[in-house]
Length: 306
Image 1 (cartoon, one colour):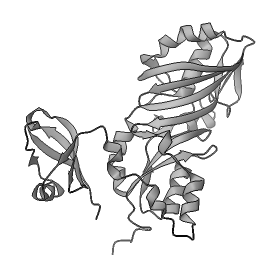
Image 2 (cartoon, one colour; image 1 turned 180 degrees about the vertical axis):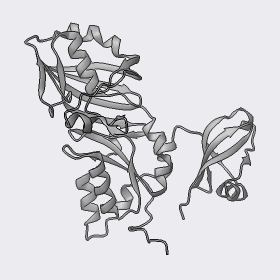
Image 3 (tube, helix red, strand yellow; image 1 turned 90 degrees about the vertical axis):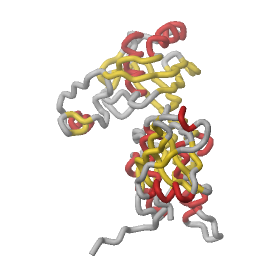
Image 4 (tube, helix red, strand yellow; image 1 turned 120 degrees about the vertical axis):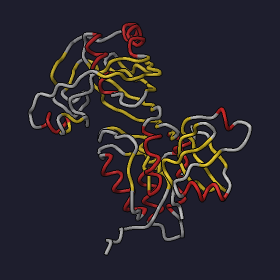
């Protein structure tokens, strides 16, 4: 006999404003419990010391996680100059110090080197796997972790405030795999003053923006409300992660074919020129995610939102 799944079949996205001192895994667990959801996962880890956007996929939305993970991310972060740490943030021990206070002009002169595609060495304390183990686990065990530089893309990096001579506030927009802590580390080394992140907030992940974020307190209040408040009203639909893709409106018969994993022809004057990923809906209901090629949609993910 199959084991019955715990919870209810909840589907959609909860754009959580993650609080400080909570891991991404803990945040997913809290949301899942409060919504009594059978299945949940997040799109892009946030460090415990970071706050901000952590989109959490529930139920069928987990099939669209890659489109949020691969989307552009935006951050606002504060760097403290004068010290580098093991973790490149306030959690680790200080490893190097300097008495130098960088000038605004010196900082701004370096920023163009960190825009566009750059090679970046991830922090030793990161979730990257080394021979099957997480780098941060190896580092915490006292092992020397050597990570290779890898290409990342930074759309923008700007100095937006300088509260004092040793504190700088930056805003960045970047692609998948970029480590903000590594930006602080590398800027500090080039400036000759060292640096580490003292606060970090993510303000966007793909189509999910800060304005739509829900705090854990708001979710808890809705879940525990006795006046009929529905916490599910805080969710965004499954297709919210697919907003950058073309939407195809298909007939009920084509929807049935897609549900069975069958390729369907796309009708209409624009069909021959469309290619790449797309999603199909029928009468306002999400049916499938797939690849468009030669006027046909080949389903790769089928949704069961019944």
